[in-house]
Image (cartoon, rainbow, N blue to C red; front, top):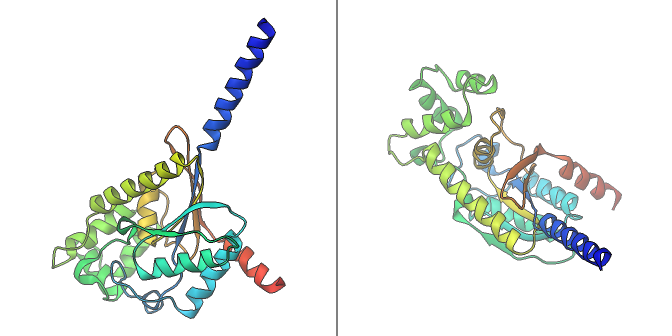
Length: 255
């Protein structure tokens, strides 16, 4: 009888351990493909331009590279460039998966700087904080003298319309939506989740999760992988990963 009890206890512990592991969630956070405004270096937050031919191609490559990943859910921001990228990624799959959209996954809102040149926006923002030019400000960012928090705050403070988002506003909505998406996937039993969003949004998320070292822009269609444990903890596993695009490119050649 004692042996049977021990065996049942072991089986229970094994099943509990498996259930805990199975409830883990892997978030594949993808930056959208290259757009017209990316190409001409204009501020693109809540404003939107379509993917370029290059942007469409890199999204397709990412889709082919991600094809072996069994996604249980797919999300994007409600911006056209993110939606289009997500649909191109999902189109490479054998099994259809509905795309869900969340406004909270949008890029940082740049207020009256929307559609302006990046150089002018960063120059105006930088001068208010003692930087003579956008180049000087970005040099400070690349050398880790300035972080994503300060960049967003500088733009917020410099916007004459007062509409540009503060870092706290961005962080609050991004933290909330990522937790909601992760918890919903966990309630489904765990698994892989595709999230297509934007560069500064992802950088804000990384900063909030403890990565303070990100000091350059994320590549279009790059993947940032974040593990969400059964205990409710986020663990950054990969940042700005272009291996899926590379794999998709190789597959296109062999097909």
